[in-house]
Every structure is written in C-alpha cells, then in structure tokens.
Length: 98
Image (cartoon, rainbow, N blue to C red; front, side):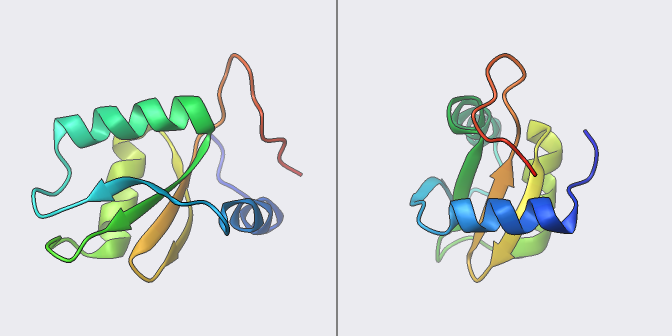
C-alpha cells in the first residue's frame, strides 16, 4: 500500500474526528486477539479510532505503527492517547481518498 499523501491524511483526520474508539489497547499490549479485532473492525469500517487505556505501557507512536504493520493498515493520525488507522476495503471501498 502506498504511503498516504498530506491531502489524504487531512481528509482522513476530518472523517475520523467524530468517531468513537472501536478498539481499546490495554495493559496486555498488542495481542493476537487485539490484532484480530482490529483487522475485523478495519474490514467493516475502513477508518477506526484506537484508544490507549490507562494501564497500557506502550508508547503511543510505536503502538500505532506496530498495530498498523500487523493489520496491513496505515496510521492517519496520532493524537493524545488515540490514533486513527485506515485500510481501504479491496472489495467495496467506502472512503474515497482525494
């Protein structure tokens, strides 16, 4: 997957602003179950918000890049304790990137 351009990242950040977190990253870190849940959520929604909870010991930027690598997605934004992941659905894309 090609890297997102600045215009595409801004578009995704605008779409993701009002989203509620779908995946919660807790004290157990990035487990196989978390990767599976994230993969399923990306397939259903294409753009999801992930929140790091209080007990999570991982760095937010490294957690975002690790989870993105394991799910084949891209990090659109890291802000506070949340980050946005994007992966276009190959069969039926809903989000059209500029």
